[in-house]
Image (cartoon, rainbow, N blue to C red; front, side, top):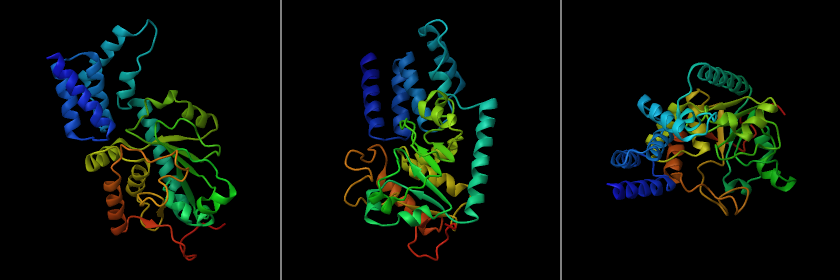
Length: 304
């Protein structure tokens, strides 16, 4: 029985590294835990469930808490079980209020121009659209964004209003954004201890997370963890910003020259389903939910 649980666990670990999310991966985790129901396999099963945007059954949380109490030093707080738990009570209410404030701020700015979502595709470097990007009502950028040198700024611009980061991106930008968004499977309960979040809050920047139902719907559709860009676009579309108030560039575009604007050392993540994400973004565009950043001066922009 033990060898089979080990094999199932190793197989599930490999599939997760490949970004093969879906019912099959959840089944592997379940079978491994069923064959050898120890605390470590329960942790992996619970993390898988949470990765896929699903609420954990209460019995799993209680079992995790009991295992952590047995293993932790006296006085050390419970961590994993709390991080995997859905936000509740005051924490959940506070996040919902922050999301409502963020949505209201976006809608207010979009009334004067476009919310421009700027990804990190290397194809951006072939276009001299930096000034046009900076002229939008809101400029949203991702992960390891830092203000570029003057030559690169002609292609990328320099403005930053909303910084969007995956949970593994722990260094905030040098610029201070108006808002920050942490992506992933709503890590509200986990991120209070993260240095980047602490640094942002110390600067007075409100930090929000994408609702878990947006993440879960994309995981089910893509059968892979969505990239930060596609996750944010799905949320903005659900907020009703499309189509006139939402434009996008540098997301789900074919690689041109290099994958990432920051160079060869910054490749696209291997766990995302890039082909399926490109198809999804193309469907959003065909449905009129997104529009590309236009070089036409008559396009909606905020006054300079």
